Amino acid sequence: MKDILILAIESSCDETAAAVVKNGRTVLSSVISSQIDLHKLYGGVVPEIASRKHIEKINPVIEEALRDGGVTLDDLDAVGVTYGPGLVGALLVGVAEAKAIAYAKKLPLVGVHHIEGHVSANYIENPDLEPPFLCLIVSGGHTHLVIVKDYGEFEILGRTRDDAAGEAFDKVARAIGLGYPGGPKIDRLSREGNDQAIWFPRAKIEDSPYDFSFSGVKSAVLNYLNSAKMKGEEVNRADLAASFQRAVVDVLVEHTMAAARDYHMKKIAIAGGVASNGTLREAMSRACDKRGYRFYRPSPILCTDNAAMIGAAAYYEFVKGTRHGWDLNAIPNLRLGER
Ligand code: KG4
Ligand code: ZN
Image (cartoon, helix red, strand yellow):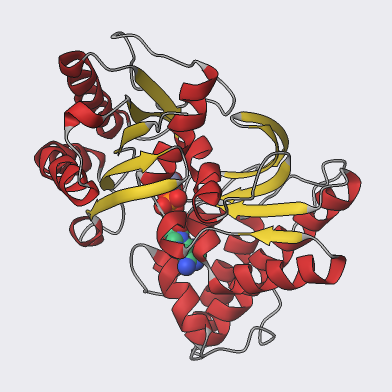
């Protein structure tokens, strides 16, 4: 069979990224231009600034991806692009760019769901991984527990009722003065702390064993900080970070294992920015080993936003026949499984 080469573009939040991916699993190049240093100044992503920066970076990033991959636009079979969910102005930059290239080169255009991209990051380093499998998706905007029934086909078992897991990390990090983005900083600081030092609640939702809620643990952290301040007590930030992280990871692992048991899933994957968390990776790996499940997780650089994962997802959509027209638009609240 002829190789399928896809140029993939991702610009849904604060990373401008492009990649060239062969047959959905081989990454010829992956370029990520992060805006983190810019948004850090404001303590979070400023949408207007993100769009402007994407406009500035998108062409150089694509050129670099083509150069690194040793290909030209003439070698491509399709252009894949994230069209939702995400920041509308940020998404539009990638969508307009992908349309322009596809139109000029008469290539098929394949719109990709950002979360389908995160899940597909698992295919890149695990040539043997095929659906069905269970996947925990934990990012800055999403927390989903899904069965990947087939490529791009999802059965959603659970989701967050309030904050996403990554959002909880970011908010707690801000509260203890660690800055944006908080996840990696809490991950690092936790290594110096005792995760048993403070007890934070593990939320359970009546009748929805696979749903999540992180607003309770976030409030408990804020209350703890307030009450320490009133009493004039010094807070050990490393202990607090470790205890908070443990509470979140415990719930993520527990719900995933419950779903694996109930749905007879023996292949478990994690995806999304929070999937790069060291404690989550260790805890999930241990829980899977204990039960004889296979555990899959992308390398940390493939967990956070990148275009290689979009190229992997675009390939499976392309093979299935998904094609988008020149009217493809950015859909900021695109639902998983929707086309
Ligand atoms: O998937 P992602 O790059 O963007 C979204 O699609 O949202 O996820 C970003 C989120 C942020 O909330 C960030 O704090 C979190 O992932 N994150 C982490 C770690 N690295 C990134 N959370 C915990 N531990 C980490 N090491
Ligand atoms: Zn993401």
